[in-house]
Length: 335
Image 1: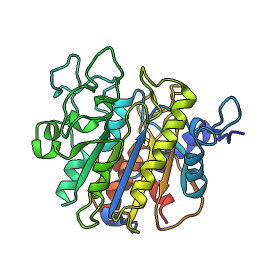
Image 2: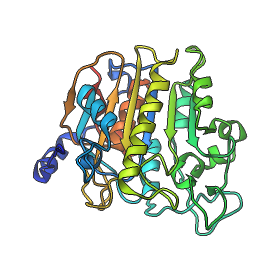
Image 3: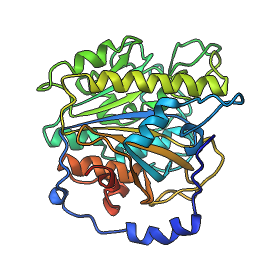
């Protein structure tokens, strides 16, 4: 049987005022983290991925449901808006820059039209200013620093890697900086790139942003479009990723894994926490840390802005964009 969490919209709205606070100093938190792993999934609502069964009564997402019931679960978490791209931009910069589409980057090669640019400061700027390291892992991307709008490149074939799920290349100071772009790497089916990056706890990146391809992020493409099969594949992929991370030398007690979904399946436009008028809907967000293993739930209204604020605060870095006016709610799941 599916677990159902009903979002009382009036309660969410009444709590928003409590979220709007002046930006506290970045060192105000005691929840310091050395390493953060973000796994970004796609286009499913909370009830689609927590305790979801298929028509035969078999669980589609047993591992994700296990994580949600044994670690930290944000029950009032929302995508910032629809569609995908502005959610990814919001997560790494605290702003959507008015973008409400999935156009390729204006720095794509070959050039694309129409295209989008994000003109602002991003998490890479903050990390490097703080002398911290980062790496992005994009499954099915053919080589580091790839600027193509998709891969495979055949417009009539399946799209596994989609540029709209790689927000970093929408910023000029990343897309046109070869050294930074080299930190955006493909992720093979053996996870070799991730295993290598995490093999040395001294050198492993402080911030790791991991994006499965469209057959493993629960989104789907022309060769993988069955709903239940997508949920099952995504669940198994999350399990494989988490196992690679938690069995690595880099998974130290001051680490955290954040698993979230960019937006729901367009079943609602609910939002919170300085979202645009079109919110991204109710989604799940799970936090895993070796500090504890016990079920914890947070009912604080949260979204990608509040998570960005939490990550930057945990790294003792200044907030970005709209996140500066919100509480670092992730700390409710990081005792």
